[in-house]
Image 1: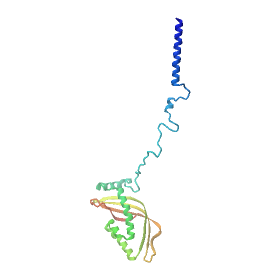
Image 2: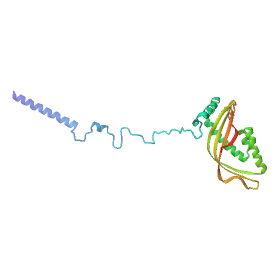
Image 3: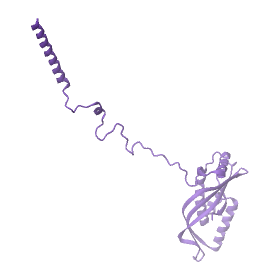
Image 4: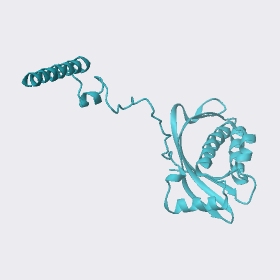
Length: 227
């Protein structure tokens, strides 16, 4: 009886050893270099779990929304209210679009006046302003004076004042420009300006438009020195 018990112990011992050996061959043994849970989550060298894209990728540059110099959006107080009155009377009115047109008109008018181009001036000016400009042109022509004029740049153009009177809107714009201007008499002697030195000009021009009119154009109704 004891011999059978001894045999059973040996048999179970052999089975246990065999099972242990099989586990060893299948799972392997620990060498100290096994991957832990933390190791499995670790990214390769130089990488991270949430890498940030390069600065140039997926970056959209937003347009600059800051108002340009002289922008209507930048004005406040009575001037802002006056511009709003114009907008309420004429839904198509936009301050920046008006200023863009005023800038173009300014350069066109001063250049045409220096050259004596009446046909260019006529549709841009009120009757009073046109007659004033025409008299000056006639005087130059009578004296056989010559003008050399170059419009260099428009430094700034900003709304100085605005108002609505009897359905007529008036907006005054302060211009700062740089020009080359030289006037010569009939014999070619310099009598005005300087042919080599740029001249800084500051003026305030007032434009008007009948808000009831279908004509969207503004005309120049007065000029004044900004000094």
